[in-house]
Length: 497
Image 1: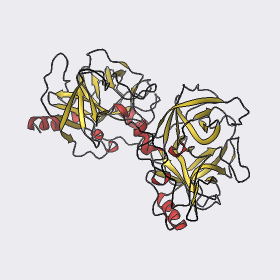
Image 2 (image 1 turned 180 degrees about the horizontal axis):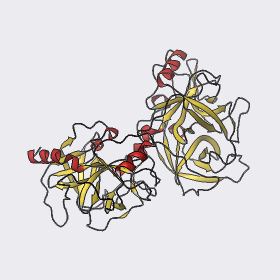
Image 3 (image 1 turned 60 degrees about the vertical axis):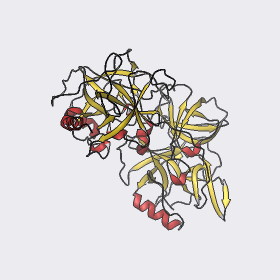
Image 4 (image 1 turned 45 degrees about the vertical axis):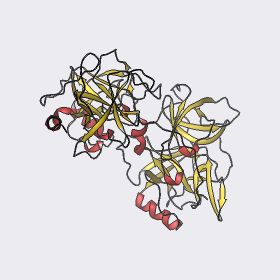
């Protein structure tokens, strides 16, 4: 599980004629129709609209990182946010911002808000889907953007406005921005461009934060943080644009949510606390003393995990306990001597998501520590096999989980699995298994990456990936099939590397 340290918007943009699109408006938009866009959220400061946002699960809202303020509330379930109305207001109890966010110019303009209680879904309140990590949107796709930002005609807008915009090719987007101002050398990474460019509508900003060297630097409120929704999926978050809103000019810039799906998703969904001493092969793979991935002991000297868990920092492994609280007594931490990431691994999308960790010492197994067997031959999973997945990933209720959680999952036919993932534009790699998530209420999310899929006492799979969103049912969880790599594993252990 990736944890965040909230970072304040450190500096206003100093050289660009840029606006963080808050204080902005939906230009040439129309009043949203009743009973539509029920996922829209008004992010407020001192009970005044400040930014847009959108509900992605019962207790979580996505918005832009530059919308962060000290005291925040959100209003859900209403297209009209007049302060005279009795609005459904929720306090924000936690804010998660990527460590890489500094300002909109540098990107990573995304923030996850946890609200004080679960929203009640119904006619006026719904969640919106957000993309998995491999999701991509085609150029010239018609999308929808909405918000309560000010317009050219009115300073304040209480009624939600919506507008159709089209996505813009990233190369055309970069070229348009470079032509507009010579000192705009490059746009940030992980963005989507839509609206504004050769189009008569989009988002904009009107509030100045700072004037420097004769150029207006603006950061503002309004439509910032609102979603760019394409094919019913929230693919982008309103980030910034040129001040002025005289469309057409340059494309609006949105944070590409798919690039952060893995960062924000992380849990054993609907899991229960594992029985004491029941899974003593489980390993917590940690970076700089913090849990990042699951793993499992397959040999007194080797832990198996996922290749994408090979992160920068000091890697250690916790073994022999179900509780990984930093304050826990007698927690045994082991140094990783060597990391054997599969040589063909590039990313989870392309498969080979497997890594073998050599520990600094050979461990003594027994009452408090056990190994788990892996397949000795290539044998397909039975349709009705009883399987379990376990991990310390975040749940919907808690940011940090110290107790090992476990849930039952069932295998999913490979053909069905391939078909379901194709519907969300993902071609599954070779050598994977599918289990849980699909037509069930349980499964694993990315925070449990590297943990084992255990069927009939054998670790047959390694948690690899799923949709960024973990509101089951949706698509099957994807696991690396261990049996396909048994020779590779055997050779490494035999060589003692």
